[in-house]
Length: 133
Image (cartoon, rainbow, N blue to C red; front, side, top):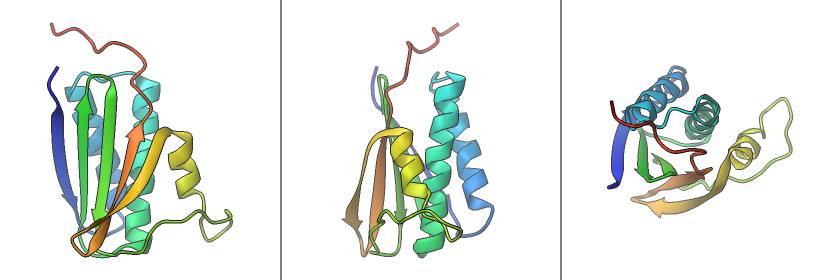
């Protein structure tokens, strides 16, 4: 199977995480990645990436996704160079990176055009994709 790619631009705002979760699920399902638990985990990761970009980033958020075989890479790009860091969880947050780490294989940060790109490699898809009808 060839690599699949998708990109979505999201404005900063309270509806962005929900829009991103819905869009990512629709795209993954269209790519025949349909395991419900795995999709739920992917939604958590995307929601946290976008929420962190809203809370700590700046400018437009670009969400991109690449899939090849059973591996999916998700990237969130924003306009600030502030690098995410783990914090002690509390009423002011600190849970986002812990959730991302819990539902992914790895994550990291790259400088990108004056801002940053946070990438997350999701856990491998647990089964074969549905056969085309």
